[in-house]
Image (cartoon, rainbow, N blue to C red; front, side, top):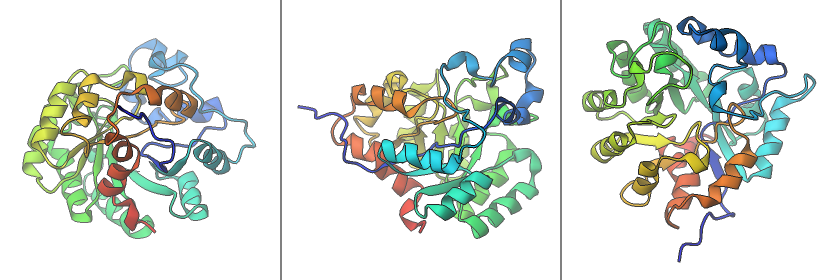
Length: 295
């Protein structure tokens, strides 16, 4: 008989952010891809460009909030031992103040060419980043997963021995999704057999293809970013419960889209097998991102 989600595991969350202290700060965070948007609602009415998909987003706090202390308190409340977060002033302070709990992921813009390569190497030296991240549909101009402009980033990740986290599937904001079509992952992994690649943001509607590619390529993994547990794709759950138990990892997307209360109210209802839970909540992330080496 399945026991369900264990409550005694120190969770690793691969998608933790920091809250904003004003609506203006929140809106400004999405300016980097504003040039890709055309519809009036996205440009003028929404607080953030995928707002139509989410409700009760918990990412704005009073201006006098210590956002690092606020996040640590939330992590402690939900038994989140470690997290990965973007690289910024807040996360650098969090990493310094709470050693071993915050791991840094650096954004990598393929349109910046060799400047991006040099930046990733510098950030690995200076801050020991554990991953790079690219949002293909959010680049200006857009850049596909398989585009030649991405290849220096992939090569650099191989050289630094860090994963690339990259969005797959239909993009949330109202802009073209062709850069994230999942079939593009296939050729990249053929050209870079050493590369560790983690698909973010669902891969929908091509989750069956994503599973086929994870079976095929040892370096391809999947994190559950931007999905409430009740909406985890059935193909992904089935794969985790069969041959993919080492490939699927938890990513909460808090506070950018989903509250931790929502995540962990839904989570016990996910029908993972007993052997999958420790891997999903902790072990796979530590192995794939080498978090046990980040001290």
